[in-house]
Length: 112
Figure 1 (spheres, rainbow, N blue to C red):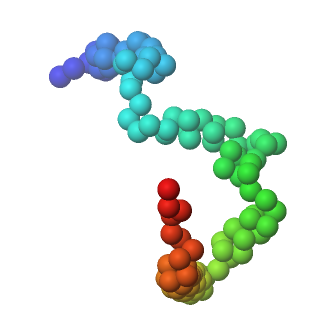
Figure 2 (tube, helix red, strand yellow):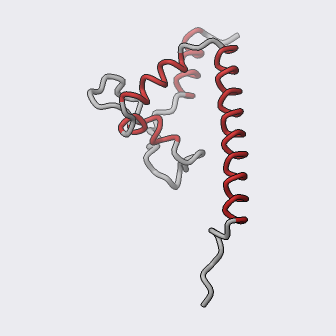
Figure 3 (tube, rainbow, N blue to C red):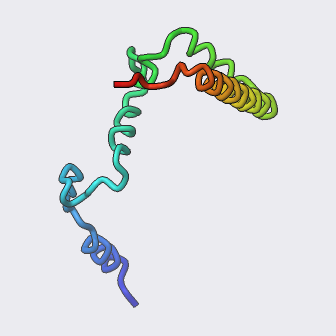
């Protein structure tokens, strides 16, 4: 049976006081490109400047994000379907205009 002091000595002998420096890219390569930069952007949550991705947004864009964020799942799906229908209609209209331009010889290259 081991003595109580012997157990503490054994545990203390297992401790490692080695400091691992994670700054070395050779020892600790970045697993996913960009993750370190993304994580570093959240280290200081209290900042006065907006995130990089919000810097180019206008007030109208931010309002649209807030509106879309407040929609329920069903309303959001309805909005997506509406956008898909609009994209389809625009594609049909573009196709008609291209055909019209072809028949009117607007798109012909000038002859040399």
